[in-house]
Image 1 (cartoon, rainbow, N blue to C red):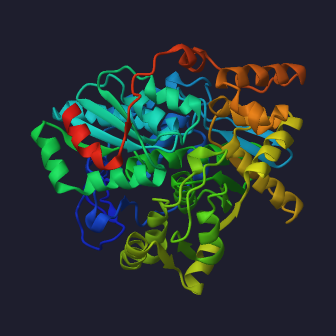
Image 2 (cartoon, rainbow, N blue to C red):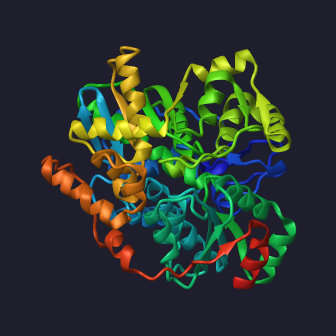
Amino acid sequence: MQTQNNIKTLAQTRSNNNTNKTFIQAMLDPNAEYGGLYTFCDIKPLVNLENLYALSYNKMCEKIFTHLGIDIPSNFLESALKSFETFRTKEIAPLVEIEKNLYSLELYHGPTYAFKDMALQPFSALLSAIALQRNERYLILSATSGDTGPATLSGFANRENIKAICIYPQGGTSDVQRLQMTTQDAKNLKVYGIKGDFDLAQSTLKSLLKSESFRDLVAKKGYALSAANSVNIARIAFQIVYYFIIGRELAKKNLHEFSVIVPSGNFGNALGAFFAKKMGLPITKICIASNPNDILTQFFTTGVYDIRNKELKLSYSPAMDILKSSNIERLLFAYFGAERTKECMQSLDETQYFRLNTDELSLLQDIFEARSFSDDECLQGIKMAFEKGYVLDPHTSNAYLFAQYCKEKLSIDTPQVIISTAHFAKFAKVVCKALCDLDENALKDLSDKEALDRIFMRLKECNIAQNGLQIDSSILDLFNKKEIHTQTYNAKDLEDSILSWL
């Protein structure tokens, strides 16, 4: 919906009611009616992509936000985007050619070595600046399967007027991911390792956001409530931008159409690609690469979202160990509107199941395709890419395998771009297992630091000098830092614990 000065209000995924909420209002309070989400609607194609491609990354972001009718004062956005100056590469998100017609968009060059920095670094700076301007204090909730947590904590550490918490599944992340959270010593941060999996962590976060009594108690302590997960539309907005880097870089090679292959769990990254396509980016297919938790593959293949008899499996790609993908809801709204989305999501909430009809599934399959890969296949993907001189993390390995399938089985010879979501150092033991042929017993006895040492020895032996492979002290120092947030919690006890901490 349009308001004055090209500022648009956002839609709600489960309601046709007009709330007149702008982007900033939804960022500060992401709680929509009937447990739904705020989202973009009526996205129009950009008139001239060539003009956009001529811009720097930051200017490109400003242009895209203006096109979407996002109401951020230009000085605030410019300041937030300066957070990219902390990244380890000038390009921010370099596009690297692995082999003919296969590219990798590297999104892991931020401070926590994962793609979540691409959104959470500017997001945290922006929200903090707005809180200061309004003289308001915010409690930021986040739940993580491994990467959102470190990026949230890094972004909000020592920010004025902000306290941030992170909920993660104890034992459900890599050692480096855990240490990036549990060693945080900023006084405005708190980390909660819970008994359970990411779906429990995420449902706990959503319950806290929806709870009027919790919101009231937080307000009595002087804080408003927001979230850093992709339930917050601001996260998705920043994730749209980097897909246009692909278009720009391939256009330089006179390549004007391409598919993207996204390793996906919560579907936020893939949703960014979908919105970019709606804005005119010439993406031919959005391919979803799943791990053994294959719910997205099931959904895009059959139209059935059924988690009634599924148990979450701990895999070699833990950030994708998710069964209830939040951002599928925004995709349903984009295709079928609020009424149908509400019907599907309420069915999923109440019965753990919903089904699309044949026509609805056909519409999705015009753009989306999905495949899942086992842990053994994941290891094989890491090996295959290494033999070609490129090092993958386990999540991106699933995308690489999908690309090889498309090339070999489907004879696809148009450009494919895998979305590289993390630096291998965050998952050193799995990568070491793949490259050094370790059995499970040897792997258990190996520390992450020892695994990193062995990987770098293999890189040296094979004379692989891929840009961005080296790691700095922010990773290496983790192994010597004291873990501060070590307590294990029951999810049902978090509300009282958070209120006590505030």
